Image (cartoon, rainbow, N blue to C red; front, side, top):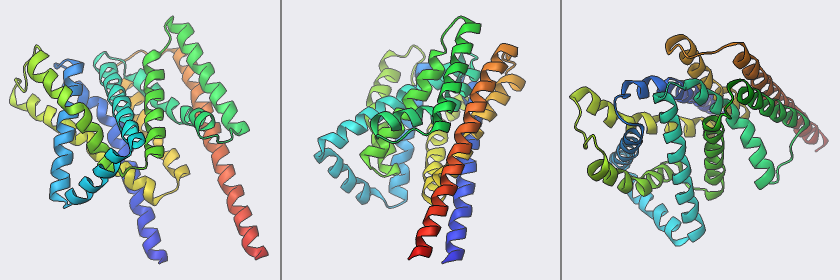
Length: 309
């Protein structure tokens, strides 16, 4: 049993690393399709994600299980509304991310994902009535101060970064409440938006549906694959390793994005931005450390309780 548990932990670690590394290098993918308008890229991403999910369900023999879960969701109006809301939120998040990358603002995308776990804490406090610890409160205040400094030095509030963090955090919150399997959830979410995306591409897009050269068409088809695979890996990670460890791995993606933005895409990263990001990094460090200490305290309490028994 211990060997099996260890094997699952190692697989969970590997899956988590792969998921966040893939998310971290996604800006390179969206840069490669930069000739296509952001709204069209989003539409192709949704359509081909849906097609890819259907293929996976059929090949994997999960179709009957998927249909059974769909019937449960449709019969429960609250869960159905939750799935619709999740679909709108994740689609909005995807568009902001694609638009930020295509506009040469990968740093904004990186900032959004650095802020994401701290926004999770705020939402958990407001909606799930979870208690906000002292370390988490300090971390959130430092991150907020970092965002304010960015707004002051640039003269513009980083709305894109804030919107990315908030939409993805709300998406995660809804997914937690809706209690739908990751495969069914992703398929339904893309199914809701796919018809609108397809109509836009065929009838309203000035570029025409799949009217590019072979290489670009293949990249647009692949957008569905690079969307679905990291989500599968993320689901595997969350099932097999602790949430604290998932939190550690979470910072791989924005760190890779920031490195790419500065060294590959040559975006400006001056001293004021470094100071603002420094406050956010300090908040992230305090947030992570406070969660590790809490986990250790809980383990000690569990151990003491077992000894008392």
